[in-house]
Amino acid sequence: MSIKIKVTGLDKVLAELDVEKIKKQQKIALTSFGLRVVATAQQKAPVDEGRLRAAIYSEVKPDGVRVGCTVDYAAYIEFGTRKFAAAYVATLPPTWQQFAATFKGPAGGTFDQFLNDLVEWVRRKGIATAAKSRSVAYAIAINILREGIKPQPFMYPAVKEHLPRLLQELEGKK
Image 1 (cartoon, rainbow, N blue to C red):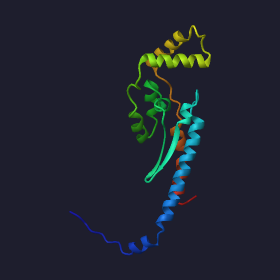
Image 2 (image 1 turned 90 degrees about the vertical axis):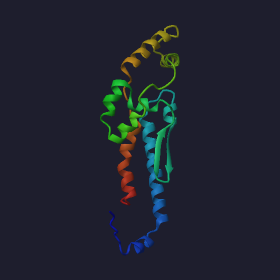
Image 3 (image 1 turned 180 degrees about the vertical axis):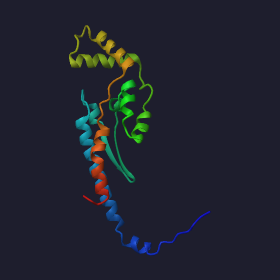
Image 4 (image 1 turned 30 degrees about the vertical axis):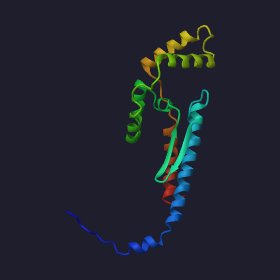
């Protein structure tokens, strides 16, 4: 079954719209949104060596804007891991919960790589002497594997903060 509906005068309304101007305004709004999100996410992101902050980006696409982070561990910082991730992700909107779920499972790499990264971190932070850094890093690694890490959200809060303004700009209210 189908019903045909004819709207009279629509062709005249469409002809009067300046589609190119609308597309330009949309691109400006999306670009501004992306830049604001990147700046805020960089401020909120935890920093050790600065790789996470430096990897936050935005990219305007024909159908929207993509904001993200190119380091492989970004989602684990954003959402946390294990019990901490479960508790935090449950508080997010459904679309963000679905996105977070794509990062479940092992992050990749070996335990030795993980331990070596932690040894370097322990040394950088001055937590232990060089002689004790491996044993301290090992204890931290075991704790992380058992308990997880707490989320340190940076992207979601940035998007949430700037989304209302983007919607206003797209509606032509700002």
